Structures are given as structure tokens and as C-alpha cells.
Length: 417
Image (cartoon, rainbow, N blue to C red):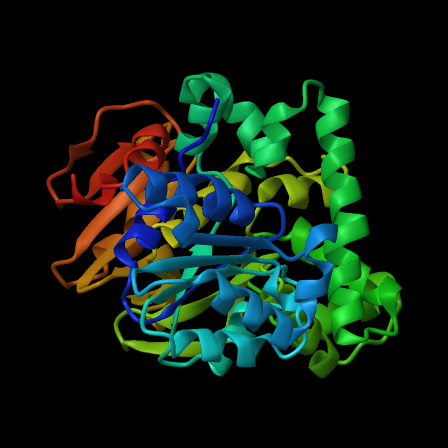
């Protein structure tokens, strides 16, 4: 079954002929080439674009070897443009071309050329492209399959798909593998032979073992507040290895640039300012995270939190970790301060949402615990608790909306219920 990736396809469609280079970025093997060469090309043909006006080049193909020279690629594309009608230029793995930035800038100057490119993470990173094509590039960030896309590809209901999804993640090829062993072997080999090597080679990391160990530590602590200093202390006390916080900060940056992880900063909701002390890290694909750990630490609470984070980011939201300070008088009559956490402070355009992730709310005490930070927020933005249970959305007397995880994940407009 073909997975339509409608959310991303629509972004490409909306960007047609906008005068910018459309740049598809994302973690390796998440479907960038498929989106561009299969789904978008199919859209163009169905929209009446002549096949001769779609110039499609897979630069990692052996037949395209000669086109990896900048001037040859530019002349080849120009030679295909034989009239003044609109041409759509689709370039895959463009990082294989030295000085590809010059080629893209030159194509951008051709009035009837609409340019779309993808590239592998090792040399074609979001941060590089944003810097190089500032104001001239339109980035489409592609994530692994969402739960709704996974269900579409697997032909399963969300309930049927959930265990596999949170275990093996959303890289599309996983859907074609029949056994648990094949899925785990694929993910483990992919991480070791592609992601890890990409990051190490690109950034000239000399101590590969300590970098790999840091990846394991981050994987085992998803959703846990941390920072480079804290991680450095962990290495010293647990691993008996001295790695300074500056090196760890640099390593974390490499992992972010490769789209392996994302960082959620802490935000003081009442003070309306960022707090630089601790942050949280989430994996862009849970299958890779779980494979790194050999399927150990399958704690559904943290995995569910990570999946909610990924879904919010997939929808284009900016996501922070919220903190609300509570002041109270203790048993001795002294004023005390306590920091309460909001799992996610979500900004989507001019809308803001406060979201708590809770595997279950079995009793009043647990619900009160999850509500405590939300009740301390005095603004009028929506406050939501997402639980794993399949329940009908409902609001309590405080206006806090409680909804089931499936409703949240399967409906892209779920935040506006």
C-alpha cells in the first residue's frame, strides 16, 4: 500500500513557483526521495504538467555520475529546458555535487525553473542549508511516519499498530519487514552503519567509543532533564571516563544536526523567559532509540511522551518544556518554593497550548498531580492532558481538556477540539 504523506506533499504543492528552492530535509531513510520522486512527481503529472517538463535526477545513480560535476549538471538541466513554459527540477542527493550551492543559486535565476532538492544528512544538513540559502530556501522538514501514516501503510487500526509503532518506530522500510528479528536487525544495522558513521565522519570525531556511549546515555534518558555538565558528571561517576561539558555539548549538537535527536528547552511560563539550566532530548525515531538499547528500557510512559513530542513537531509546532513556580508555607510556617513541570509548552502560529502526557489517571491523586502545574497558569490558552486510554474528550470545571492518545495522534486538528 502506498503511504501518501499528504501533510508533506501539501507543503510541496503550496510552495510551487514561489521563487524559492524547496529543500526537503530529515533523518536518513524517512522517505525524502519517495516524497519527491514518487508522490510529488505523480501530483505534477496529474496536474497536467508534461513529463518533458519534469527534470528528475537521482545523483546517487551510477548513470548520473557525469552530472556530479557542477557545470555539467547545470548545462544538462539548461539543455532540457527547450521552451519558456514552467519546468520542475527535482534533484535527489544533491550533496554529491561539489559546490552544489552555486548550481542551485544559478538555477534560481532562471525564471521558468522551479527547483526541489533533497540530500543526505551527512553533508546536507538543515543548519547548513538555512545559512547558505537564507531568504531563498523553503525548508520542508520530513519526519518518520506518524501513527496515522503507519496505520495507513500497515492497514491496521491504531490499537493494532500501537505496540509495533512504539517499539520499531516510523521509518517506512520497517513496514515491509515481517518478523521482529528482521525489524530489529534493520534498525540496529542502520544506526551502526549509516547514522553513527555519518556523524563521526562528518565531524571528524576521534573518540568514537565515548560518542557512542553518549548516544546510549541520551537514549536511556529520553524526557529526563539534563545538560552537558550533568552528563559529564555521569561519565565520571558511572563510566569512570572524563569528558568535559564542552565536548559533550558539541557531541549533542552533532546528533541534533543529523536529526537523530531534538532538544526541548525549559521555559518559565510565568516569567515568560527561557531557563538555560536543563533541557530535554527526544529521539526523532523511537525505533532507532529502542534498537540502540537492544529493546531494553521499554518504559511506555517515556516513549509515549516522546511520540507526543514528535507529533507536535511534525505538525510544525515549536515545543518547549514548561516550568511553573509554586510558593507555599511548609509545616513550620516558612515559605518554600517548588518547581512544577508542564510537559510541553506548544506554540502554533498565534496559538499556545499547555500539554501534559499521562499514561493513565487511575485516581484523583494522580489527576491532581498532573493538573497541579496547569492550574498555576493564569492565562487563557488551552490546557490539555493526553492519556493513553481510549476515551471521549471532556473538559472539567477548570476548563482542562482530557483526551485519549489515539484521538490526539490520529487527528491533525486534535488540539482545537
